[in-house]
Length: 190
Image (cartoon, rainbow, N blue to C red; front, side, top):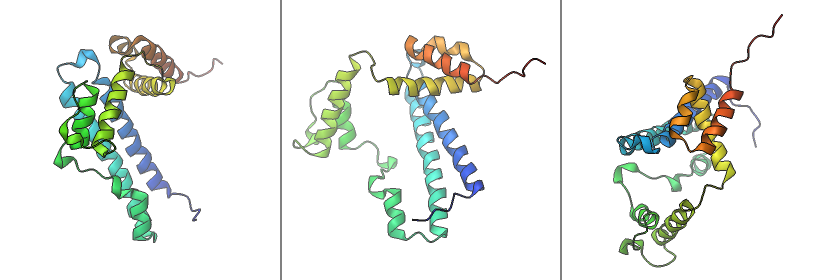
């Protein structure tokens, strides 16, 4: 396997794109909060697709470089995981409808197919997510990730007080700590 580092201009471009995608992901989380009831449908879809498109740009930049440097088409296809690609233009599929039915506690749709089929597994996955949503949040890694995203955005916008207005208290508290760590260091007194 090749051990040549990524060229610096490409590395910086990728870092910029990932940073943009992360900010869009934070906004997806932000628009799920109760005070955003009037805009959540529109804005969560805008920001989620913005994040996906931005990461797609990063993938294609890296793929172009790999192709330029001689990566075989089969290897590149494997790295891009093309079998997982989903086209948004076709809209929600049977698995999406099945998962939504499971999340909302509805009957398993006929399109979910037989037990063991992909839509059926999506339905059961939705049911498990709905069950977990009834319990207090217990995944510390998920809470920490959310707090980091919110704390970073609050620090970048210099709006730390906004954290208390829309986040669950445990996320807001951790986000404030994250934002506090990100404060610009002050020069030491002489």
